[in-house]
Image (cartoon, rainbow, N blue to C red):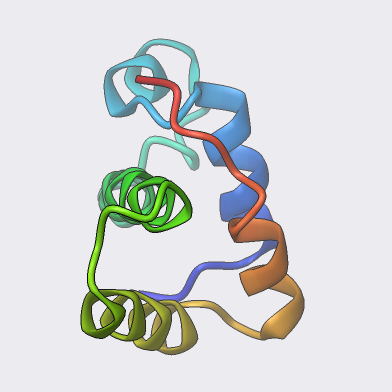
Length: 88
């Protein structure tokens, strides 16, 4: 699983909601892979919001940043990812 610019835009389009993706997405956008990526992205966005609010440990922040480094295709995507907001 790799998060790309495409997935950032798809996340914004569907508000991080897989159910919404199923309602409005194209057949390509509705793929199982994209569904899994959107679910993972929403979880990471929520975790980043906890970090921004200062309610996590330094170790947890390091784990989330390591996960972002592993999943995102490059640093520019990580930077864009960190700007996303949870829609919940």
